[in-house]
Image 1 (cartoon, helix red, strand yellow):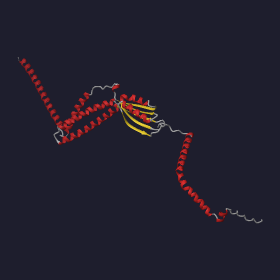
Image 2 (cartoon, helix red, strand yellow):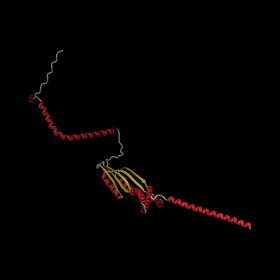
Image 3 (tube, one colour):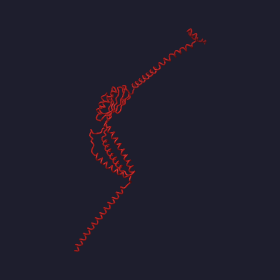
Image 4 (spheres, one colour):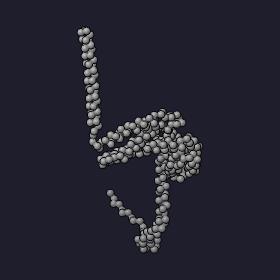
Length: 320
């Protein structure tokens, strides 16, 4: 009996020890949780002016995640769906620049475009017209071929720029920026102090400016991809190209010298023709007056008889 009582007392003691240890561990965990909660609440306390911006940052993270989820689908990057900017430059020699310019204008109008610029020099055989055409991208190649048939094509340069990735990235940035602007507006409506109001107004203004800049870039890209640009030079039969090389040599110098001589003689004859009426009007009376003055200076006897004076007799030479 004594042995059985002793065994029961030992088991009871071990159970009490285990229960005591479990209770101690529970108390320790509860205290640790309380201290962690106190420290978290202490860390979250901060200046009142920074709280709205911190809340705006948290809202931006949520809105950014939503925007990323909305635009997570892969964009359609097929050739017919890509954003491509087409630009072209060409020079065509035509018989009549004005008539060719009118035909170009008609071709652009038929394609649904317009003339973005028109500069013309001279109206003779060396006339040149610089036209900037804005045509839809789908009609770009057709308008180029139609303009090339107006005369003799001297040069052509076609360039393309793929801006698909830039367009997709810009669209995603605009969506995110709009969400940030909306979150700032919601926080501004709930502002309860002057400090919060000022800080949120400044933040909202900055975000709206960034959004406006992104939207302006998007409009610019959309304009360049929707309407292609073709710069057309229409040159008359005698117009010289800017790519002509400068010739050198004896014949070139002779040709230049003869041209300068002809130009000089032309100028000289022009000046002489301009002075001739004045010479006739004033030169003839002046010549008559000079002749009369010379006659008055001669001796009267010689003038009356018309006999000239005998030549002087040379002096006699003495003998050696």
